[in-house]
Amino acid sequence: MASGASKSAAFVLLILNVLLYFIMTVIATWAMNHGIQLSRETASALPIPARIFPIYFPIGNTVTGFFVFFAILAGVVGITTSLTGLHNLLQLNLPHLQAATTSSLTSLAFTLLAMGFASKEIDIGWTDSNLRTLEVVTIMASVSQLFCTVAIHSGLEEALMQFRRLTGVV
Figure 1: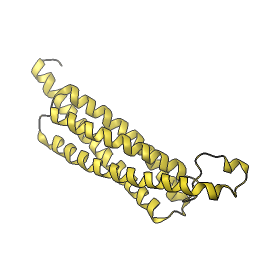
Figure 2: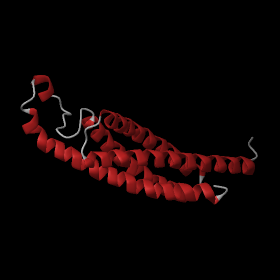
Figure 3: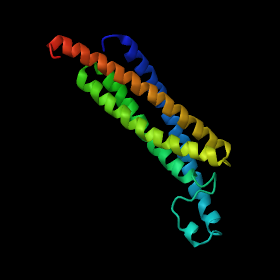
Figure 4: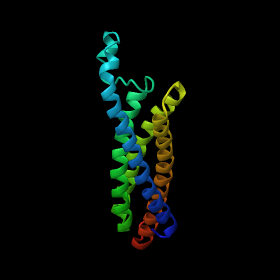
């Protein structure tokens, strides 16, 4: 990167993302475990279609099962892409920056999907404090990942301009 501003911003945001995605994964995994343990006794009183539905959660509302599943998925993908993004960002060459950009976009897509379910769960209402914490962490992670993606893209553009100047390609 030509200037260190976008590199340092992306570096700090990637470290923040690792922490946010770790918290998101831990809370979502707890919610999944809690839902699995409570679903047997709660679902036994439900009528047949709801009883055999695989993503029934006795905690939260009707969106909770989807939200928790995609929060786990976004958390795991986010942790791995943030760690590989840190590695790629420290290499300071064009192919590694392109790989960091691609992984950042992948993580952003999964996180925005989980944030969409978090927004729907907030809209429906009736959730406990642990799920509200997961909703807030998911929204914070999506905003942080968006800023990180923008910072990595700007660093990639700087590196491409510098590469074109050095090679004389227009």
